[in-house]
Image (cartoon, rainbow, N blue to C red):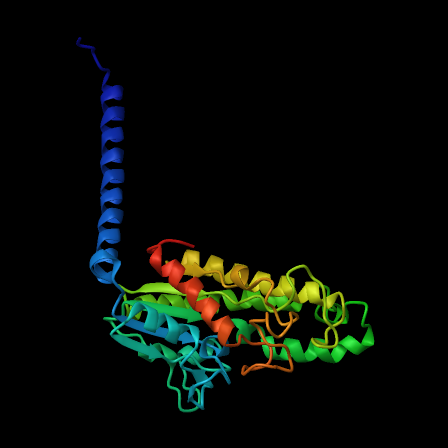
Length: 306
């Protein structure tokens, strides 16, 4: 049955057709991108062949046997090494280094060259765990431990960082966001076809906010404050990853209940006086293993999972 269409209706239909065609093109482009991504990973999801790991001490694994780089306190049982072995990559470069900030992506750190120099055009996979030292993990722990004696039942650390009327640590996290974003942009520029994954930080303190003084010498109410600070850091990393075409790996969730306040047999993060080979307030070998499994799980799901 024929219907007469007004000129305006024809234009409207034409616009709709053009819009649908454009959307179809986008869908096809996404589909082809996904196919290319899968192809880069190999047939039937076999591992990518070229992997570069960037990061700080939570990546490098200080004091965890066996240490393979004294300058960077790097272990061959850190999560990148475990991931590389599990995925049977043909080329693996780990330039993670204890004490690294986003600045060390571009500048040497002792005998470790600028970390970004390891990222090449043919790199298939890049993992990045950075930002903790930009915010000042080490100095925060030292400051809060030092202030705890002032008010063991209170929150002297939170008061110290909020003395100016705003929380200095929240500001530091916000200031770190564009630095991490810049690193991700540079990774994409150097390795345009690589899958890029941002790795978050594991659960350092009890998720329920309870304390364990004197094993971890913070005042009672500063435990929840520091827990929330770490959660804000991880939230920032997740957001920056999402905005810069990178996946995000949550290592906090899988490590809840195994923080530095738990018994030695159950802990995956060592306290300020470690009982297993690891740096204070850092993952031990089990912690690195759990972070590796979280990363492997994300990699197995394919790109685009945050």
